Image (tube, rainbow, N blue to C red; front, side, top):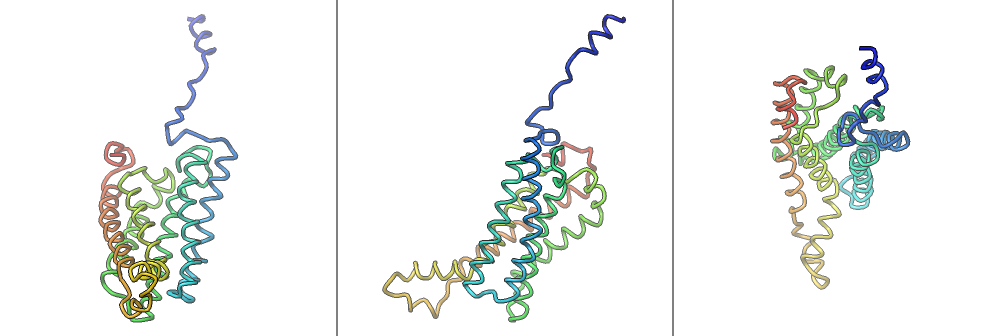
Length: 239
């Protein structure tokens, strides 16, 4: 009836649920700041790569590269905090969030691989997970890149865990020269510092490498889910 139509037209539209990652916003300022933090990873990645290729594993260079990597990793945390999820409507570069993570991780791993190869230290225990991680991104990008660019990457907990493990493992590998020095000094004690110079502990490198192996396993699982299920299969993609 006319009365019902008029009454319905006066009803206020429902407000978006702030907990919904696809519609929630933190305001234009927060969204713009979040987009700027996403760009930080694109800008910092070539700087870290240049430092590593230039003179890594020099401890001083490794400290600087680690500092830049920590800034880039923190930007991944704070862009979601200030701007909401990557699919928030206010974020113009939200769809580039996961791409920035991939560029950072793969770029740094490639730089480490170049240095290790140049020095004859490109061992299979490091090479295998790195190659799988890079191949995973290439395959997913080739087969699902266009679809994901339109709709964004699915908020998959397995993919998030993979990214976190990659970040932590790569950060430990980048910082291993100076972290190993500190660990060896702590292990030897102040009176026996010289005793550890001939027996450098590989613990930091092994831990970082192990985290890459774990990340590789989760990356294969998440790649299978992305490649074998459509965007509408929310139950599978969102667990």
